[in-house]
Image 1 (tube, rainbow, N blue to C red):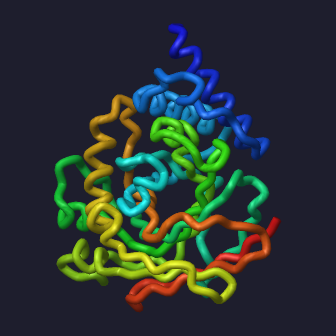
Image 2: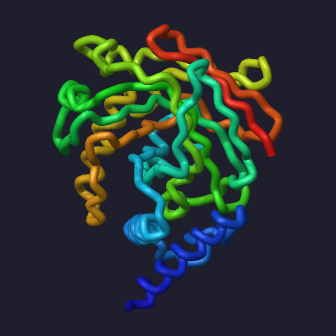
Length: 275
């Protein structure tokens, strides 16, 4: 094993331990300037292998940093991605509500997203209409993101290794993609979601901010995934969350987060946080 491969193997195990203990780590790129995106995806691949070996089941993917409005703030200027898991996925109840303990998360933040599930596997090179024909349902969701690097200071490679910042995905009411008509890409790009906390508005976001719209973000990701040497599969039934429509909002125990969607085809959500 090369020195770099050994370091990446150690990084994967350190991240698993940091996740289990909900603690911080030194920033990899600050310690090792040769820690590239290529190496970060190798670390993510090792983490994926370790989680599957431990009994966790991949359920799909999160796409991160599709929101062009926050690139400068976080110093990341292109999408990243990573798996979501049986242990990190849940569905809101019929009223669109869920309760989540923040104990497992380090510096958690909340992101309102648009979520898809595939009826059949997509292929690189498909346009938005072809991708829409592969989709079973669409939903509004909350992703809890967190990082094991202090103060949310990192480079893109660090975020890829750090579970792609994924902590938990809460999915709301699922709607057949057909309800968005023949041009679902255009319809979904028009969505506006207002995020609130404890009854007060925090921010309103427009879905077109995610690389032009959720289906466009999906298209970009499918192509990027196909170019990766890891060859992670995209399969029927996979759930994919396409990126935050507002900035990621810091979370604390004892809060009630809520959303309002300006399209009655999608249900707003409410999330209660506990310690």
